[in-house]
Length: 91
Ligand SMILES: C=C(O[C@@H]1C=C(C(=O)O)C=C[C@H]1O)C(=O)O
Image (cartoon, rainbow, N blue to C red; front, side, top):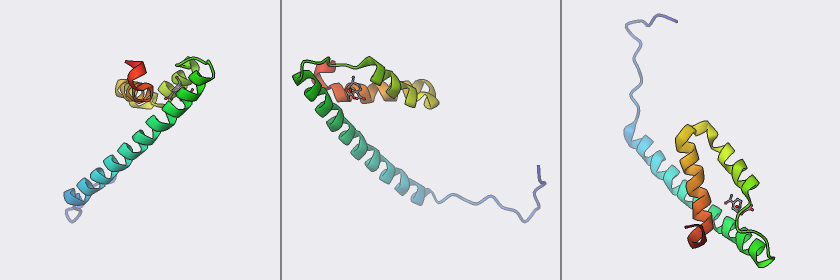
């Protein structure tokens, strides 16, 4: 590790700017989640109208795998997304 000199300072994070970024990120995440729900419900309705199943487990396993990086919370997040897509039928 490089030794620090007396003149080196740790930069102070700009909390207000970072909070603005968080607000923006949350708005984007919400927009994307709402779109995901729409797409998932459209697929589900079309499949069921054609006599297919409500749930496709291998696709859902792929979705769960995508969030594995985030650990147990990733699983909860993926499950929440899947449940949102199921709407009232999934409850
Ligand atoms: C969207 C689909 O329908 C359902 C919803 C899924 C999802 O929200 O990711 C995945 C699989 C299906 O259970 C699909 O089959 O792709």
